[in-house]
Length: 163
Image 1 (cartoon, helix red, strand yellow):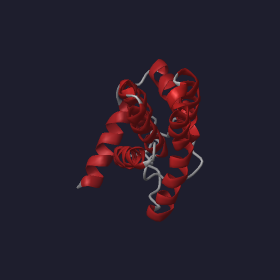
Image 2: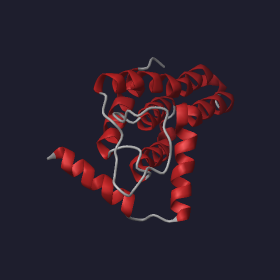
Image 3: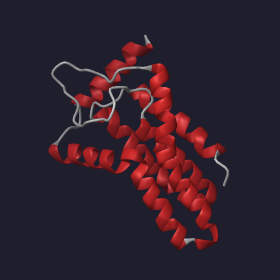
Image 4: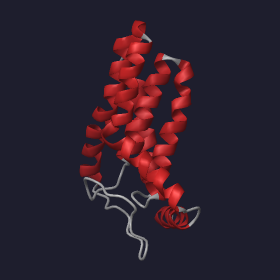
């Protein structure tokens, strides 16, 4: 039953609210989220802006790429293939054929959580994390449950990283 719901939500996300502009935004969010790059960049910039907490900002930024590596270990254990929707090919590429959990969601929520621990006003970064995560099923790259699992895993990582 959950698999069917997951597939139906994915189909809905792939067939509604699509326009060239919306798809370009989704693809752009996917690009900046690759390998945790945007989070690393934010951590470096914030280390200069808030030098008193510089080490913590760098650590929170490095968590993005580290989370991707940890995520891949889970992907290898679970081995869930990426979704295939007949007539609706994915609107992006991926370094692996494995889907669960979403590495974009894992790294984004890990970093947004860690950065919010450094400065509560950084909670605004959850908007970026959520947008990066939601674009994955919108582009047909992940099932919605992959994104939810990635967000949960990332949040846990962001809470346990020593800052």
